Length: 303
Figure 1 (spheres, rainbow, N blue to C red):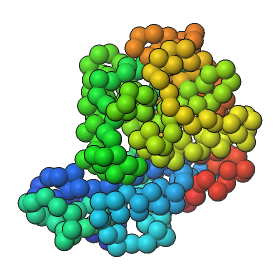
Figure 2: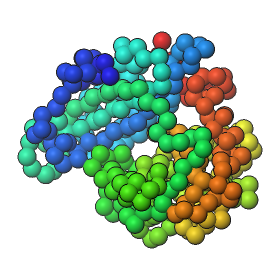
Figure 3: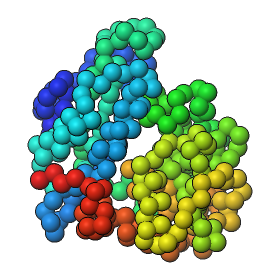
Figure 4: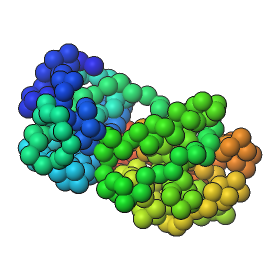
């Protein structure tokens, strides 16, 4: 990591520091986004995936916890491109914008506390095994309900829930966890949306199931319909359904499209990456790397 956007300008990464007394550090009063940018070796170009959509969601998240952004949507998109170009990476990267309560202040609350915004980028490959598939366990932790935190907002403090589920999964020898909602139906992974393929149908939990309104989740719906002729059904999924699924996969900025081959040590179908998941992977990566002009609107060139 070479440079970051901090205090309104691009600075050397080592200078982008906050105090240990910062409100967001003490109380989790920050919101964030995860944005991928893909390097296309043949084109010698970096493409930022759905830049604007991520910042539109950041604006909504910030509003949910009373953070006033000093910059417009266009400003934040532009800062991101400038920062990516300044860092000069020629490999896949991860972009992390954060809007946070920046005041050095002890005391709970959200109003009357100073806000700020920063961005950093980092080289970033596959977060999970997208080729052979992953083994997941159903977590004993439940997804936080919308009566506890604003639904759909990416709040830093809320991710202790996902971290607990992930830690539990790793301790049990799994790669990742599936979180159930408070009523016991399937919600999502610990940071990823879930898709199930059953009898040729694509199924995913509905937004009212207290899941993150994933940007990749919507992209999968579009690709499945446009490229494979498969519509997506949004409905509640009982955990028992997972074991009889033809295919399962996580999707998200970090997870990309990660096939699930086992749940609670029980194989999904034949325990291999399913054909629909594989097709979606191939289509998705061509789109994200700028190799499919049909999805040109998804990506923004850096160089």
